[in-house]
Image (tube, rainbow over the protein chains, first blue to last red):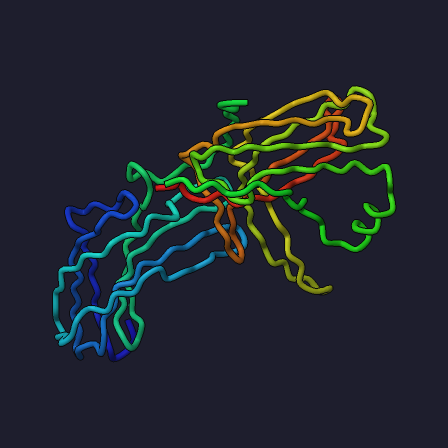
Length: 135
Length: 162
């Protein structure tokens, strides 16, 4: 939000589900309410790795919502997730996927964290010492 | 589909410091490991490794272990009056012992051939400026609880082949 250009953004995932298999299609509804209509609206799929020294940030995909846009609007969306890398939680670093709704030009944002991993469960990187399967 | 990647001699990870480089070149009796393996392997894929440890004056009762290690790596910039330094923290999340031999007299002092399968449900290599997932074949020489030699041979672990 910016002074004089208040906008309320909402991102709702279908059935409230926020954990997915790699490559799955995410569906939901993006909605907003503003005094002035935004000049553009984008969905961004963002991947972050977080660690003690900061985060690495990458926009994996940007999907502009088709115009014309109204000041108060509601748009269903569908976006295909990548096959990886998987969401994980380690003892030192973690990888988090986020779906963002971004209003232009001010870059006001709302976001929803999602899990992208096999069985729709983030990997837990605990120390494993499996024995070798073959020698 | 799993694609076969040719095996080659992996390069050991070096500290990059000139004194360390000089030390290795000048000390003829210094231990040196060789590892031949694919530079890239898929999660769930097979991994075939040949390895050797050359060490002119290896102490008696030295045990040589070869492991596949996956680790989280985090880099942190620390500012001080003397400048900015980068501190790197590493935390292994998977340690798969592949081979183990007692060092013997001879040249090399230990060697082996091992075939294994990389676990499927874990993280592949991931590059980043600050945060990474790295994989390496480690050759360790130990005596009791003391680590005498540790050499790391990085390789890239790719996602499960589809």
